[in-house]
Length: 446
Image (cartoon, rainbow, N blue to C red; front, side, top):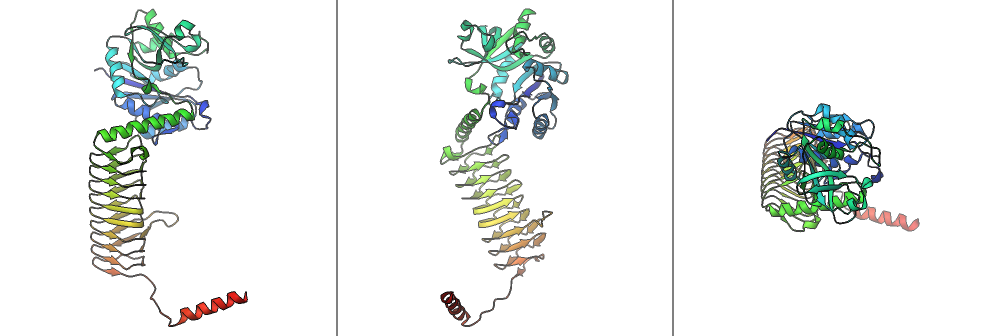
Protein backbone atom coordinates (compact mmCIF):
# COMPACT_ATOMS: atom_id res chain seq x y z
CA UNK A 1 0.00 0.00 0.00
CA UNK A 2 1.14 3.57 -0.67
CA UNK A 3 2.91 5.61 1.97
CA UNK A 4 0.79 7.65 4.34
CA UNK A 5 1.17 11.02 6.03
CA UNK A 6 -0.72 11.85 9.20
CA UNK A 7 -2.10 15.25 10.21
CA UNK A 8 -3.66 15.64 13.66
CA UNK A 9 -5.60 18.82 14.42
CA UNK A 10 -5.01 19.88 18.03
CA UNK A 11 -5.30 23.66 18.00
CA UNK A 12 -8.68 24.19 19.67
CA UNK A 13 -9.17 25.80 23.07
CA UNK A 14 -12.12 23.67 24.12
CA UNK A 15 -14.01 26.49 25.85
CA UNK A 16 -16.83 24.16 26.89
CA UNK A 17 -14.36 22.26 29.10
CA UNK A 18 -14.20 25.42 31.26
CA UNK A 19 -10.47 24.86 31.78
CA UNK A 20 -7.13 26.63 31.40
CA UNK A 21 -5.75 23.34 30.06
CA UNK A 22 -5.91 22.83 26.27
CA UNK A 23 -8.66 20.36 25.47
CA UNK A 24 -6.37 17.74 23.92
CA UNK A 25 -4.31 17.58 27.14
CA UNK A 26 -7.21 16.43 29.31
CA UNK A 27 -6.63 12.83 30.30
CA UNK A 28 -8.54 9.77 29.26
CA UNK A 29 -7.40 6.41 30.65
CA UNK A 30 -4.32 8.02 32.16
CA UNK A 31 -3.15 9.61 28.90
CA UNK A 32 -3.82 12.95 27.18
CA UNK A 33 -6.51 12.81 24.53
CA UNK A 34 -3.85 13.71 21.98
CA UNK A 35 -1.93 10.50 22.72
CA UNK A 36 -5.01 8.43 21.88
CA UNK A 37 -5.19 9.99 18.42
CA UNK A 38 -1.44 9.60 17.95
CA UNK A 39 -1.59 5.93 18.94
CA UNK A 40 -4.36 5.29 16.40
CA UNK A 41 -2.39 7.07 13.69
CA UNK A 42 0.83 5.24 14.57
CA UNK A 43 -0.84 1.97 13.55
CA UNK A 44 -0.72 3.23 9.95
CA UNK A 45 3.10 3.45 10.15
CA UNK A 46 3.08 6.99 8.73
CA UNK A 47 6.15 8.38 7.02
CA UNK A 48 5.51 11.66 8.82
CA UNK A 49 3.15 12.97 11.49
CA UNK A 50 2.28 16.65 11.78
CA UNK A 51 0.49 18.03 14.85
CA UNK A 52 -1.29 21.36 14.35
CA UNK A 53 -1.26 23.34 17.60
CA UNK A 54 -2.84 26.63 18.63
CA UNK A 55 -4.27 27.27 22.08
CA UNK A 56 -1.59 26.33 24.64
CA UNK A 57 0.71 25.46 21.74
CA UNK A 58 3.87 25.05 23.81
CA UNK A 59 2.26 22.57 26.21
CA UNK A 60 0.61 20.65 23.36
CA UNK A 61 3.89 20.45 21.45
CA UNK A 62 5.68 19.17 24.55
CA UNK A 63 2.97 16.54 25.01
CA UNK A 64 3.21 15.39 21.38
CA UNK A 65 7.00 15.14 21.46
CA UNK A 66 6.89 13.19 24.72
CA UNK A 67 4.88 10.50 22.93
CA UNK A 68 6.89 10.57 19.70
CA UNK A 69 10.05 12.70 19.42
CA UNK A 70 9.94 12.40 15.63
CA UNK A 71 6.63 14.21 15.12
CA UNK A 72 6.53 17.61 13.46
CA UNK A 73 4.49 20.47 14.91
CA UNK A 74 3.14 23.64 13.36
CA UNK A 75 1.13 26.44 14.95
CA UNK A 76 -2.19 27.77 13.74
CA UNK A 77 -1.82 31.29 15.07
CA UNK A 78 -5.35 32.34 14.06
CA UNK A 79 -8.29 29.97 14.52
CA UNK A 80 -9.82 30.26 11.06
CA UNK A 81 -11.30 26.78 10.73
CA UNK A 82 -10.25 23.21 10.04
CA UNK A 83 -9.38 23.91 6.43
CA UNK A 84 -7.03 26.67 7.52
CA UNK A 85 -5.48 24.33 10.12
CA UNK A 86 -4.73 21.69 7.50
CA UNK A 87 -3.24 24.36 5.25
CA UNK A 88 -0.66 25.10 7.96
CA UNK A 89 0.38 21.42 8.08
CA UNK A 90 0.59 20.70 4.35
CA UNK A 91 4.07 22.23 3.77
CA UNK A 92 5.47 19.74 6.31
CA UNK A 93 3.52 16.65 5.27
CA UNK A 94 4.37 14.08 2.63
CA UNK A 95 3.69 14.75 -1.03
CA UNK A 96 2.97 11.19 -2.16
CA UNK A 97 0.54 8.45 -1.21
CA UNK A 98 -2.29 9.23 1.20
CA UNK A 99 -2.84 11.87 3.86
CA UNK A 100 -5.03 10.95 6.83
CA UNK A 101 -6.48 13.78 8.92
CA UNK A 102 -7.45 13.04 12.53
CA UNK A 103 -8.56 15.14 15.51
CA UNK A 104 -6.80 15.34 18.85
CA UNK A 105 -10.11 15.28 20.76
CA UNK A 106 -11.54 12.19 19.03
CA UNK A 107 -9.94 9.23 20.82
CA UNK A 108 -11.85 6.16 19.65
CA UNK A 109 -11.21 5.91 15.89
CA UNK A 110 -9.95 2.38 15.21
CA UNK A 111 -6.94 1.54 13.10
CA UNK A 112 -9.11 -0.92 11.17
CA UNK A 113 -11.43 1.91 10.18
CA UNK A 114 -8.52 3.99 8.88
CA UNK A 115 -7.31 1.00 6.85
CA UNK A 116 -10.81 0.72 5.34
CA UNK A 117 -10.61 4.37 4.39
CA UNK A 118 -7.24 3.86 2.75
CA UNK A 119 -8.62 0.91 0.80
CA UNK A 120 -11.49 3.13 -0.42
CA UNK A 121 -8.97 5.82 -1.32
CA UNK A 122 -7.73 3.57 -4.14
CA UNK A 123 -11.12 4.29 -5.79
CA UNK A 124 -11.56 7.96 -4.80
CA UNK A 125 -9.42 11.09 -4.49
CA UNK A 126 -11.06 11.95 -1.16
CA UNK A 127 -12.66 9.59 1.38
CA UNK A 128 -14.73 10.82 4.34
CA UNK A 129 -15.61 8.82 7.45
CA UNK A 130 -19.31 8.93 8.28
CA UNK A 131 -21.68 7.49 10.86
CA UNK A 132 -25.43 7.19 11.31
CA UNK A 133 -27.12 9.34 13.96
CA UNK A 134 -30.89 9.12 14.35
CA UNK A 135 -31.39 12.23 16.49
CA UNK A 136 -31.18 15.76 15.19
CA UNK A 137 -27.58 16.29 16.47
CA UNK A 138 -25.71 19.31 15.10
CA UNK A 139 -23.42 17.26 12.88
CA UNK A 140 -22.59 18.01 9.26
CA UNK A 141 -24.68 15.88 6.89
CA UNK A 142 -23.27 13.64 4.15
CA UNK A 143 -25.18 13.76 0.89
CA UNK A 144 -24.31 10.49 -0.84
CA UNK A 145 -25.46 7.70 -3.11
CA UNK A 146 -24.01 4.45 -1.87
CA UNK A 147 -20.25 4.85 -1.50
CA UNK A 148 -20.18 7.96 -3.68
CA UNK A 149 -20.22 11.22 -1.75
CA UNK A 150 -21.68 14.31 -3.41
CA UNK A 151 -21.11 16.94 -0.74
CA UNK A 152 -20.97 17.68 2.97
CA UNK A 153 -23.35 20.25 4.42
CA UNK A 154 -22.52 21.81 7.80
CA UNK A 155 -25.49 21.83 10.15
CA UNK A 156 -25.57 25.63 10.29
CA UNK A 157 -25.87 25.78 6.51
CA UNK A 158 -28.20 22.81 6.02
CA UNK A 159 -31.82 23.00 4.90
CA UNK A 160 -34.55 21.18 6.82
CA UNK A 161 -34.45 18.43 4.20
CA UNK A 162 -30.69 18.06 4.57
CA UNK A 163 -30.90 18.04 8.36
CA UNK A 164 -33.27 15.06 8.08
CA UNK A 165 -30.39 13.00 6.66
CA UNK A 166 -29.10 10.55 9.29
CA UNK A 167 -25.67 10.03 7.68
CA UNK A 168 -23.31 12.40 9.50
CA UNK A 169 -19.75 13.62 9.12
CA UNK A 170 -17.04 12.57 11.60
CA UNK A 171 -14.49 15.00 10.17
CA UNK A 172 -11.91 12.26 9.56
CA UNK A 173 -10.59 12.37 5.99
CA UNK A 174 -8.21 10.36 3.84
CA UNK A 175 -7.10 12.11 0.66
CA UNK A 176 -4.63 11.82 -2.18
CA UNK A 177 -1.56 13.69 -0.92
CA UNK A 178 -0.81 14.98 -4.43
CA UNK A 179 -4.17 16.76 -4.87
CA UNK A 180 -4.94 17.71 -1.25
CA UNK A 181 -3.02 21.04 -1.31
CA UNK A 182 -4.92 22.13 -4.42
CA UNK A 183 -8.26 21.21 -2.85
CA UNK A 184 -7.49 23.01 0.42
CA UNK A 185 -6.31 26.11 -1.43
CA UNK A 186 -9.68 26.33 -3.19
CA UNK A 187 -11.72 26.47 0.06
CA UNK A 188 -13.43 29.79 0.80
CA UNK A 189 -15.32 31.26 3.77
CA UNK A 190 -18.72 31.53 2.15
CA UNK A 191 -20.65 29.92 5.01
CA UNK A 192 -22.53 30.78 8.20
CA UNK A 193 -19.40 30.76 10.38
CA UNK A 194 -17.09 32.60 8.01
CA UNK A 195 -14.47 29.86 8.43
CA UNK A 196 -12.47 27.65 6.11
CA UNK A 197 -14.28 24.30 6.39
CA UNK A 198 -12.10 21.31 5.57
CA UNK A 199 -15.28 19.48 4.57
CA UNK A 200 -15.60 21.78 1.54
CA UNK A 201 -12.84 19.80 -0.20
CA UNK A 202 -15.50 17.27 -1.21
CA UNK A 203 -17.42 19.83 -3.26
CA UNK A 204 -14.15 21.24 -4.60
CA UNK A 205 -13.02 17.77 -5.67
CA UNK A 206 -16.31 17.03 -7.39
CA UNK A 207 -16.17 20.38 -9.20
CA UNK A 208 -12.76 19.39 -10.52
CA UNK A 209 -14.09 16.07 -11.78
CA UNK A 210 -12.51 14.05 -9.00
CA UNK A 211 -14.27 11.28 -7.11
CA UNK A 212 -15.23 11.44 -3.41
CA UNK A 213 -16.07 8.35 -1.39
CA UNK A 214 -17.53 7.35 1.93
CA UNK A 215 -16.73 4.81 4.66
CA UNK A 216 -19.25 4.32 7.49
CA UNK A 217 -18.29 3.31 11.03
CA UNK A 218 -20.10 2.86 14.34
CA UNK A 219 -21.05 6.17 15.94
CA UNK A 220 -19.15 5.24 19.12
CA UNK A 221 -15.86 5.52 17.23
CA UNK A 222 -16.53 9.13 16.32
CA UNK A 223 -17.16 10.39 19.85
CA UNK A 224 -15.52 13.79 20.26
CA UNK A 225 -14.76 15.30 23.65
CA UNK A 226 -16.10 18.81 24.19
CA UNK A 227 -17.26 18.86 27.83
CA UNK A 228 -16.32 17.33 31.16
CA UNK A 229 -19.45 15.19 30.96
CA UNK A 230 -18.37 13.84 27.58
CA UNK A 231 -14.90 13.16 28.99
CA UNK A 232 -16.46 11.15 31.83
CA UNK A 233 -18.63 9.24 29.34
CA UNK A 234 -15.55 8.52 27.23
CA UNK A 235 -13.71 7.23 30.29
CA UNK A 236 -16.59 4.89 31.05
CA UNK A 237 -16.63 3.65 27.46
CA UNK A 238 -12.87 3.14 27.37
CA UNK A 239 -12.84 1.18 30.62
CA UNK A 240 -15.74 -1.04 29.55
CA UNK A 241 -13.95 -1.86 26.30
CA UNK A 242 -10.60 -2.43 28.03
CA UNK A 243 -12.14 -4.79 30.60
CA UNK A 244 -13.95 -6.78 27.95
CA UNK A 245 -10.82 -7.05 25.82
CA UNK A 246 -8.72 -8.16 28.81
CA UNK A 247 -11.12 -10.95 29.69
CA UNK A 248 -11.44 -11.96 26.04
CA UNK A 249 -7.65 -12.41 25.87
CA UNK A 250 -7.52 -14.63 28.96
CA UNK A 251 -7.17 -12.27 31.93
CA UNK A 252 -9.28 -12.95 35.03
CA UNK A 253 -10.95 -9.88 36.52
CA UNK A 254 -12.76 -10.89 39.70
CA UNK A 255 -14.71 -7.61 39.85
CA UNK A 256 -14.33 -6.07 36.37
CA UNK A 257 -16.32 -2.91 37.06
CA UNK A 258 -13.80 -1.88 39.77
CA UNK A 259 -10.61 -2.27 37.70
CA UNK A 260 -9.27 0.75 35.80
CA UNK A 261 -6.84 0.58 32.90
CA UNK A 262 -4.58 3.11 31.19
CA UNK A 263 -4.20 3.54 27.47
CA UNK A 264 -1.04 1.41 27.36
CA UNK A 265 -1.77 -1.21 30.03
CA UNK A 266 -0.62 -4.70 28.98
CA UNK A 267 -1.69 -7.82 30.90
CA UNK A 268 -0.70 -11.33 29.85
CA UNK A 269 -2.89 -14.39 29.63
CA UNK A 270 -3.87 -16.13 32.88
CA UNK A 271 -2.99 -13.14 35.02
CA UNK A 272 -5.46 -12.56 37.86
CA UNK A 273 -6.57 -9.06 38.80
CA UNK A 274 -8.51 -8.56 42.02
CA UNK A 275 -11.05 -5.87 42.89
CA UNK A 276 -10.30 -2.15 42.98
CA UNK A 277 -6.99 -2.26 41.12
CA UNK A 278 -5.88 0.88 39.28
CA UNK A 279 -3.32 0.76 36.48
CA UNK A 280 -1.51 4.01 35.78
CA UNK A 281 0.52 4.53 32.60
CA UNK A 282 3.27 2.15 31.44
CA UNK A 283 2.34 -1.05 33.29
CA UNK A 284 3.14 -4.53 31.99
CA UNK A 285 1.85 -7.63 33.80
CA UNK A 286 3.18 -10.93 32.50
CA UNK A 287 1.18 -14.13 32.23
CA UNK A 288 0.37 -15.86 35.50
CA UNK A 289 1.01 -12.88 37.77
CA UNK A 290 -1.56 -11.97 40.41
CA UNK A 291 -2.55 -8.48 41.54
CA UNK A 292 -4.72 -8.54 44.65
CA UNK A 293 -7.29 -6.00 45.79
CA UNK A 294 -6.74 -2.25 46.23
CA UNK A 295 -3.40 -1.92 44.47
CA UNK A 296 -2.16 1.09 42.47
CA UNK A 297 0.48 0.42 39.81
CA UNK A 298 2.32 2.82 37.52
CA UNK A 299 5.41 2.57 35.33
CA UNK A 300 6.27 -0.97 36.42
CA UNK A 301 6.91 -4.46 35.06
CA UNK A 302 5.68 -7.56 36.90
CA UNK A 303 6.96 -10.96 35.84
CA UNK A 304 5.34 -14.37 35.69
CA UNK A 305 4.31 -15.86 39.02
CA UNK A 306 4.72 -12.65 41.01
CA UNK A 307 2.04 -11.59 43.48
CA UNK A 308 1.27 -8.03 44.53
CA UNK A 309 -0.98 -6.80 47.30
CA UNK A 310 -3.47 -6.34 48.67
CA UNK A 311 -3.06 -2.62 49.32
CA UNK A 312 0.32 -2.26 47.56
CA UNK A 313 1.66 0.60 45.51
CA UNK A 314 4.21 0.12 42.73
CA UNK A 315 5.67 3.35 41.37
CA UNK A 316 7.64 4.09 38.18
CA UNK A 317 10.85 2.19 37.63
CA UNK A 318 9.79 -0.90 39.58
CA UNK A 319 10.80 -4.30 38.17
CA UNK A 320 9.56 -7.48 39.82
CA UNK A 321 11.18 -10.71 38.65
CA UNK A 322 9.47 -14.11 38.66
CA UNK A 323 7.87 -15.32 41.89
CA UNK A 324 8.43 -12.09 43.79
CA UNK A 325 5.92 -11.38 46.54
CA UNK A 326 5.02 -7.80 47.45
CA UNK A 327 2.44 -7.78 50.23
CA UNK A 328 0.05 -5.41 51.94
CA UNK A 329 0.97 -1.78 52.56
CA UNK A 330 4.25 -2.05 50.66
CA UNK A 331 5.46 0.74 48.38
CA UNK A 332 8.19 0.15 45.81
CA UNK A 333 9.73 2.87 43.64
CA UNK A 334 12.52 2.71 41.04
CA UNK A 335 13.71 -0.64 42.37
CA UNK A 336 14.62 -4.06 41.01
CA UNK A 337 13.52 -7.11 42.96
CA UNK A 338 15.13 -10.33 41.73
CA UNK A 339 13.52 -13.75 41.58
CA UNK A 340 11.86 -15.01 44.74
CA UNK A 341 12.22 -11.84 46.82
CA UNK A 342 9.63 -11.52 49.57
CA UNK A 343 8.47 -8.15 50.91
CA UNK A 344 5.52 -9.11 53.08
CA UNK A 345 4.18 -5.91 54.57
CA UNK A 346 4.58 -2.35 55.81
CA UNK A 347 7.73 -1.54 53.86
CA UNK A 348 9.15 1.15 51.58
CA UNK A 349 11.79 0.26 49.01
CA UNK A 350 12.99 3.19 46.93
CA UNK A 351 15.99 3.28 44.57
CA UNK A 352 16.98 -0.24 45.58
CA UNK A 353 18.36 -3.44 44.09
CA UNK A 354 17.36 -6.59 45.96
CA UNK A 355 19.01 -9.92 45.17
CA UNK A 356 17.20 -13.21 44.66
CA UNK A 357 15.42 -14.98 47.51
CA UNK A 358 16.01 -12.13 49.94
CA UNK A 359 13.44 -11.61 52.69
CA UNK A 360 12.57 -8.05 53.68
CA UNK A 361 11.06 -7.80 57.17
CA UNK A 362 8.06 -5.69 58.10
CA UNK A 363 8.68 -2.00 58.57
CA UNK A 364 11.89 -1.87 56.53
CA UNK A 365 12.67 1.47 54.92
CA UNK A 366 15.35 2.41 52.43
CA UNK A 367 16.23 5.97 53.43
CA UNK A 368 17.07 7.04 49.89
CA UNK A 369 16.73 10.84 49.99
CA UNK A 370 19.08 13.24 51.77
CA UNK A 371 17.03 16.33 50.99
CA UNK A 372 18.90 17.03 47.77
CA UNK A 373 19.83 13.76 46.03
CA UNK A 374 18.48 10.21 45.80
CA UNK A 375 20.85 7.35 46.69
CA UNK A 376 20.69 3.62 46.01
CA UNK A 377 20.55 0.67 48.36
CA UNK A 378 21.98 -2.67 47.18
CA UNK A 379 20.97 -5.87 48.94
CA UNK A 380 22.70 -9.09 47.93
CA UNK A 381 20.98 -12.41 47.25
CA UNK A 382 19.60 -14.57 50.04
CA UNK A 383 19.89 -11.80 52.62
CA UNK A 384 17.55 -11.41 55.58
CA UNK A 385 16.58 -7.90 56.53
CA UNK A 386 15.12 -7.79 60.02
CA UNK A 387 11.89 -5.98 60.82
CA UNK A 388 12.04 -2.19 61.21
CA UNK A 389 15.48 -1.91 59.66
CA UNK A 390 16.41 1.56 58.39
CA UNK A 391 18.85 1.28 55.46
CA UNK A 392 20.48 4.70 55.09
CA UNK A 393 21.59 4.96 51.47
CA UNK A 394 24.01 4.74 49.86
CA UNK A 395 24.60 1.38 51.48
CA UNK A 396 25.30 -2.19 50.35
CA UNK A 397 24.25 -5.38 52.09
CA UNK A 398 26.33 -8.39 51.02
CA UNK A 399 25.02 -11.80 49.98
CA UNK A 400 23.65 -14.05 52.74
CA UNK A 401 23.89 -11.19 55.25
CA UNK A 402 21.42 -10.31 58.01
CA UNK A 403 20.36 -7.20 59.88
CA UNK A 404 18.99 -7.24 63.39
CA UNK A 405 15.45 -6.00 63.91
CA UNK A 406 15.23 -2.31 64.70
CA UNK A 407 18.68 -1.54 63.30
CA UNK A 408 19.75 1.65 61.57
CA UNK A 409 22.31 0.58 58.99
CA UNK A 410 24.63 3.37 57.87
CA UNK A 411 27.64 1.34 56.72
CA UNK A 412 28.08 -1.50 54.21
CA UNK A 413 27.48 -5.00 55.59
CA UNK A 414 29.90 -7.71 54.36
CA UNK A 415 28.63 -10.96 52.90
CA UNK A 416 27.41 -13.48 55.50
CA UNK A 417 27.67 -10.92 58.31
CA UNK A 418 25.04 -9.97 60.89
CA UNK A 419 24.69 -6.21 61.34
CA UNK A 420 23.15 -4.75 64.49
CA UNK A 421 22.85 -0.98 64.66
CA UNK A 422 20.76 -0.09 67.71
CA UNK A 423 21.21 1.13 71.31
CA UNK A 424 21.88 -1.50 73.95
CA UNK A 425 18.78 -2.39 76.00
CA UNK A 426 18.97 -1.60 79.74
CA UNK A 427 16.38 -2.93 82.25
CA UNK A 428 15.78 -0.88 85.43
CA UNK A 429 14.26 -3.16 88.09
CA UNK A 430 11.00 -1.86 89.59
CA UNK A 431 11.24 1.52 87.84
CA UNK A 432 8.05 1.04 85.82
CA UNK A 433 5.87 0.78 88.94
CA UNK A 434 7.57 3.70 90.70
CA UNK A 435 7.11 5.93 87.64
CA UNK A 436 3.44 5.00 87.30
CA UNK A 437 2.81 5.82 90.98
CA UNK A 438 4.55 9.17 90.52
CA UNK A 439 2.48 10.03 87.43
CA UNK A 440 -0.79 9.12 89.15
CA UNK A 441 0.13 11.20 92.19
CA UNK A 442 0.83 14.28 90.04
CA UNK A 443 -2.44 13.80 88.18
CA UNK A 444 -4.47 13.76 91.42
CA UNK A 445 -2.77 16.92 92.69
CA UNK A 446 -3.41 18.67 89.37
